[in-house]
Length: 407
Image (cartoon, rainbow, N blue to C red; front, side, top):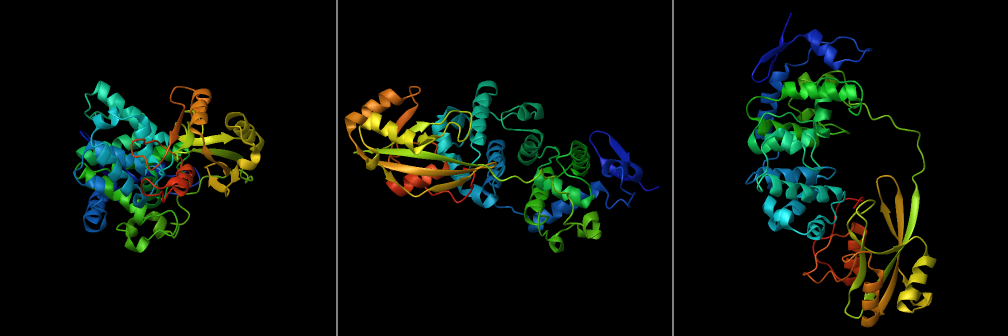
């Protein structure tokens, strides 16, 4: 009986086809020929990466654990083309872990504006402060220490150590799940615990002992650029001949999509943003609570009804509803609901009234501020629709977001 040799350090283990089938089949599958020795995948992908993979991304230059870490967090839920300019600005401002740890969270969120999923930025900042306090500002080298940092799980920790230090660590992000799922014809969806466990076993078996950084970049690149979710480019894939899904003509079926619950209409919500602008061209903003949408970001004053916004304007600024200018509605999509925002513009608020508002409205000492995006001394994080609105009203500060509808 043929043997599949799996290189594992420091012991070499052996996997027979029967064991392979046990790892990769469901109860309803029939045994199949082993498509490829997992130990052969590494050299194939390393050669492909050197020939065809992406090799000049910003985080691949002057590679360090810190730069890899920042890029991996930014690349969660965001495409490479969008991340590049954000990464370059972020690293220019925060070139080291210590620089990031010492920065105000508002400045971190300011440079994240437009990338969306802002919990990533808050976790990055918290993790940097933890590293500064417990590791002297040096990114940790032990897997357990890396995986314990806020916002980092098993796969991200493995990717950082593999890419930065060439350490043999398997990874299993969405791209890798798709590649391994097709090559080994894994039935089911990776969200199922049993399927994920099989994929982790295969990820461990396929990770080579040498050229780990190149292999890790290769399998991520292959999934992102060739073995895509829809319309995979099998003609360009270096493993077409060994891929069980392709051989069976099932590359469009594997991996199976996540079972969907009964389709429901997306919830729709509405809110009204009050935009008082003082005679210095500044708009009044308030900080969002840490929990909930846009946690920790700065937004215009938000109300659930137009009546509430008008009442507030009357009480604080002594103006009638007719003084409010209704601007065009902004439609914004979150992951689980749609939000319709109606901005209400209130021009030329007097300076004395402005001071009263700051004193009376503040939820905490730093809960409100008067903001002008043209004032480079004040750098805060803004949700994408707020940034776009303020840029249109008051002028731009840096490149507008081209990305996430979830920002």
